[in-house]
Image (cartoon, rainbow, N blue to C red; front, side, top):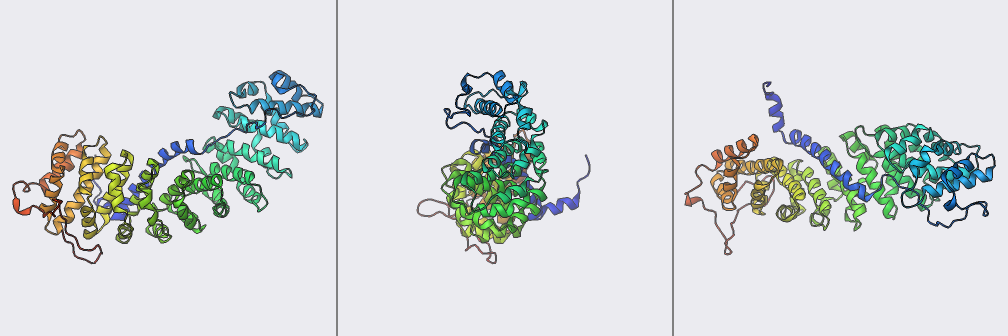
Length: 518
């Protein structure tokens, strides 16, 4: 085992250096969970189903698609007669648009995909282009293997060309198909991006563009911005930022939701990406959306804001300056547990900042609801709230640390020492250690140690000396030896109590200049 790098160890003591890296690691961890949840909120692929199953085909006297076999459809699509080709392609589209069990694999095996792609070419009528594009949209809405069939047959360049079709229904259907392809994963997404789709999509949004068209555009954009390993080429996708800023002005739930998802993906990365998003002037509108009653909007808006505060102190200050902190108290009490967890995670990235930022969290009255989450939240929310408190104890001044103790942080911290999650226990041990170290500096170690003992903390620390995780039992043992060796039996250090029998923890108003008092 190599000798420890003493300089690296010293650097890690500096608050921003160590905690910034940890905040980023946890952002990736939480992003994975959120992407899984996101699949329920926003479809990455969607089929274009028939609204009217009784829609007549052209010509009206033609055989109904309900009664046509796939072989008859294939034969019709290969006909020299233009009307027969159109009628068969409509039948193909209708089969693929049925709501249950569309015959995608059978259509693929019969060789219908390359025929549909051929019909996308400009020498065909717009009606035939539309019907074949619709059929391909539904093939690409299926499994990755089905989507790959559309890609490998060369559909992407022809679909890109159709974005400039004079027929708006054709262009809109092409966007739908390309959005499905981009939603298949990083490889497919990058093939679409390489064709220059971003600038084309941006140009399609005008005051005259229909609402359904704009919805499809922003949904496709969100798919073009999403996925990691690798992330999309940022120089390419950032061209969408001016449009995304404009889209935040729409009063439409779908558009706002997908716009915020796109921004959440674009902020999920290094500070350079975060800065580009800030410079697009979207932060004020994102912050306003933290008050949205619509969970489908609130979730991605909160995710985007949370990503931004993982950046530099200056980037975090941008979010704070636009009033984000005033929303977090309510978000920490939200009925949706995922919102509570996300809000606690965002706060933890602010408390990972400097003393002034920590003070702004305190001034916004966020600490009491944060501690309430530690008491009553689900475990994931408790863990994020614990991170927020521990980050504060790491970077805050002694008065700020004393304030959270006065607010009742010790009991929920100590309760979490019985968690089955080793990482959570380690976070709590760090927080308690920072609190006791601050007390030690002021000669109040015994008083605070007794407070911890009275909420059951010492018993739990002693139990952790038998923990299977070596790091945990060493932390616990070290803390007991350092801070608790002389607590028992000393009645002179008992903390004062009020008329209700509650422990009083004396602290001056929390300002960085004040002296620390327990």
